[in-house]
Length: 411
Ligand SMILES: Nc1ncnc2c1ncn2[C@@H]1O[C@H](COP(=O)(O)OP(=O)(O)OP(=O)(O)O)[C@@H](O)[C@H]1O
Image 1 (tube, protein in one colour):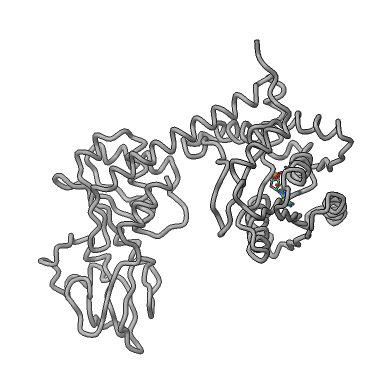
Image 2: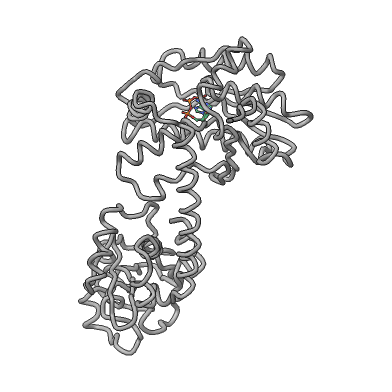
């Protein structure tokens, strides 16, 4: 016989003990929706001597957002919790509105947390959010990273974000609130089927899918993702980081499962280019297939070349040639150059530069040499510091081996 799950508040308190038991103070982000209102009430009760502060972000995106923030302020006051409203005013029409609002919200909340000496801020995501995210990502064909559940605990923007409600469902929270006569705001966008999340939410309900089971599946995928990260990080220990390139032993790479190869390749690519985001998944899979067939491939500004028992991942010369000229200190997001004199700038050595500069014997391939930094005055080549030590100029890579391993863990 199934025993009934304990009261949702008891489960949230248990999660808070686990996640925030040692903290003297905690922030909570409350939109006014049922989930975060329930969280605020549970927190007020759980706090017992801890400082709990409440913040609401007013995105100013729909009429009435100010009233909603004021209603949260009143509810917080009734619980004797200090509350602030943080205002966001959008300064550009470009880009994805929801993503921009979410990003701005996290930045505003982290600034507020830091000003108030709060190491952690609790958010009201529930098991239903997990289930919806999983289904949305499945529909988009995401890989294991996209399908993995949100973690209960995450560091970002200098703050710990805690999600103590991932084990409870939206409906049971609504029942819990209703039973106590506590009101919340039903945001009209929760009915708007223009949003993918709302369409997925409806599909889950109409098909009678079990959100709690979907949320558990996402959690298991998260555990598998973490295991893969560790395997990939172990494989990354064999990498040699030299002269701005990454060299991987070829045999272990080609014998590794495709997900490990993908992680190594994405991390190496980002290490080379310094890109904030990984290349598109389909592009990476395509590159892996070409590598398996022994071809050399380019991937988002990196060049990957199988040669002998090694796989060399380096900057693509054409991409280096497109990098803006720099007057220091950093060029092409890869090299730090010191000792530039007025009138001197760094650009790629390029094929033309190779003809003016002996490069064999420097331990570089032709492509690596072409993509390496050159110091020029006007058109005149003054020095190619990676090829030979140049009087007065010093050169070192912006990222080291530890950064490569960090990137591998992140994918
Ligand atoms: N405008 C906001 N101000 C403060 N916190 C917010 C705001 N919007 C979202 N959050 C926080 O992020 C969590 C997840 O956001 P999401 O957009 O999924 O929630 P929501 O639909 O606004 O409503 P709910 O309050 O019911 O969770 C919220 O539970 C809340 O903790």
